[in-house]
Length: 490
Ligand code: LFR
Picture 1 (tube, rainbow, N blue to C red):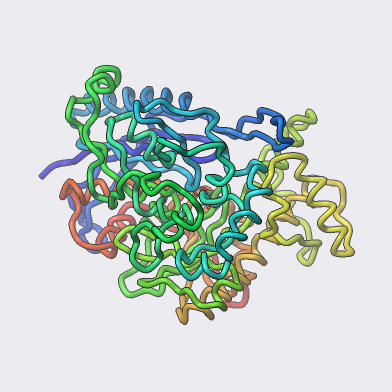
Picture 2: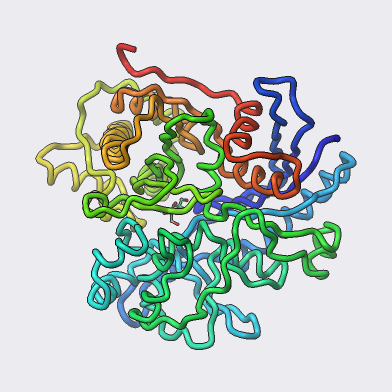
């Protein structure tokens, strides 16, 4: 059997990509696993749009979902062309994006605007209102989710009305526009705060306690199942064959990224999915719903194959990109490579912040907020970009270390290395500091874990790959080079 081809749509908070992926034939490599190769056919910027303050005094941050959909179609057209120039046929399309956010559509399928971005402040009022109806302890016992102020249930509580509306999570909204089918993909559904962690089904008792309409979310769909096939209009516009299926993948980007962690069979898997956020934790077969776990604010999100991602959200490279945005708006462009080189030259033991703190979630003057946080700890941050960057990276590495330590204590796992996947795996300084802080070898890569995870699930649905997660991960190991950063003294 020859090479098989798939399209992966991967949209992050700051950019989106539409990718041509090819799978196989089986390599002569490590365990003979088929290789996966990615080619980015289309790249487009994404970002939170700031509409200022509404009549209730809350900020309105939103996503341009219609613009994103236009870019997705442009990208699919490019993928179709690229594939046919190689004599390949696209077998399916898979979509992943960030989690939590949604669009509301009415019976006729019309979208209600704006589609809010999770970093806006509208949930400041609704978090206490929700907790008055259902306590944080009760919520955790059912859903197993860490407290994050932007979880879908707090956002839904801020909607003026939900009557007669469907909530479609962002990948599901894009799939709806491609196929006309309304579904809720399971891994992403687990980030709404409305899914039962044990059964993986909607927590109907929470819908009634919170006064949410029963059928607010369309029926669940598991990774590997098809939403439906391309609408004729979309097929025509993109040049993809009519009847091309849109297959559900781990549509939560972090679910896809962790599916592509190049762990070996039987390994106790610890990972840092490093991008806008750092998602730091271990992979489990069953949720941990203890009070100690709630107190440590660990989440139990669903992964592909019914795995549990037991992790915490740590601030991530958002802290750095927001600083760069601030400096650039003030007229100073500092290339990342230069910033990292000068930050790396600074001595260890400098000032730190709590990279986990909610105070860094919103956009806006990040260097000043970091300096203020350092000062509150009784230290001073030199007013130089290199010092700010070093402070961010030292603080992230320290947060990774304490989070992994907690994750292993609470779950009883004993990982012997930590896999760093995603864009942040390219940041050599951060990988080095992480190895030093955790005392574990860091295995860096793949950079494109999210897109790879997306493709693995499609390829298996099409039987271009077979076997469980272990077999899928063997394909990742056969396809990418990893870099190892040893802890000091190892
Ligand atoms: C990462 C991510 C995280 C989620 C956050 C908000 O891109 O999906 O997993 O907590 O974004 O959706």
